[in-house]
Length: 554
Image 1 (cartoon, rainbow, N blue to C red):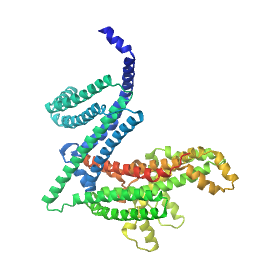
Image 2 (image 1 turned 90 degrees about the vertical axis):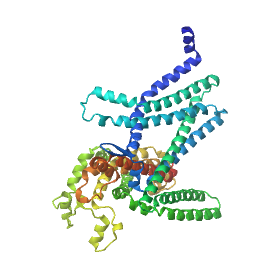
Image 3 (image 1 turned 30 degrees about the vertical axis):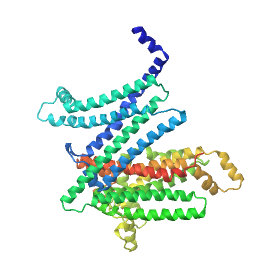
Image 4 (image 1 turned 180 degrees about the vertical axis):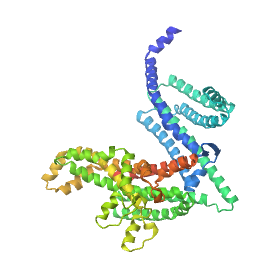
């Protein structure tokens, strides 16, 4: 028996299994780390957001936190997640069919173990959901008892060995073992070089299909409960109406965008005119449906929406200016001028300076007292002292007041305190953007510029028609990173904000921080964090579609 096993181990198939085993063992540590510090925290945050959570876990509230934050858009968010999962399943199966056609193979039998393993993945998620409450109850069980490692191990073992937990684990393990057994039997009878790929793609497709249906069913159930609660309280059931109308509006926006792209690519003038008018009609119709957003925003959390507006002001005030200034500086420092290495280091210094220290210095410079350094400097030119970081009024409103003109509140613009923070952000990140632009300029071949000069092109024409298009990948990268960074900005805002500014500098991330640490509403803060994640993901997708299509690669 031992000799037969040894012969199988050293055979060709044995060598293949050794290679597979070695590869999986090499990948195992990274997979464990990614799951422990990447996937599990996100899944746990979703679990927290579905509960009333203050220090310890409270009762299950479903999507109530999302509804409180963004009203009916919370349901739309989860329906979008469900649709995304179904789309991922479709992409996985599409990849299976494409690979099978390319290699002239039949992948359908591999769908059996793949589907079983996909179901097993869903059951393992179910096992985690069933196990987690028992583990989280350990602190409550330890109240009034002398705490020790032995007690913790005992309570943890009890949580893992609860009858319903063991049943869930047995179901998940059993289905997974059946899937692996079917995989092994099928490989023995019909070996294929791409069996692992087919199994993974089939399993991924089934997993996302089931997860998408479960998410959609859960969201629909929560929507029904919310509507029933509104009816019992005597309120009009506008939530479902908002969800349907806003969804239709977004679909029409997408259809208008696709139709406009088709109109641009149209060869005939009639086709362009017809498709362009149709796209305009769909755009107007979509806006009519999305006009339901104002009542939704009004019904949501005012702090959250105020934080979103502040974040939009912050993004609009930083990203265009820091990229524009960095582009000019990089173009100047790329020329053969004396001392350019010194200036490159000088402009990069703010980026590597500790954020808390530099923000504290800015806070002292722009103090609202007349004795502040910036106010003293302005006094030399006869300008009255300003409150700076203490000023909650909009900067456009302040300018209008100085000119004796009255403007409505919606046109007041960002507060002067936020403008100071915008100036700090531009000062900090211009050096980083400049260095990246310099690297992009270094990748442009000199022969192209020399050929343009020979053809009689001026420096401006070379910059406009050669340098800028060839820098589009760099601009795309920097704009993407900058937009995401503005929605995640926290450290310098937290250091520079003052109570006198009346929350006019509290961006979305600061609002989440205050909700989590100051108000200790962990569940609600987790829900807000996922709303922010959805916004960042949407902006990234839009930026990729709008600006990514205009990127010119050499």
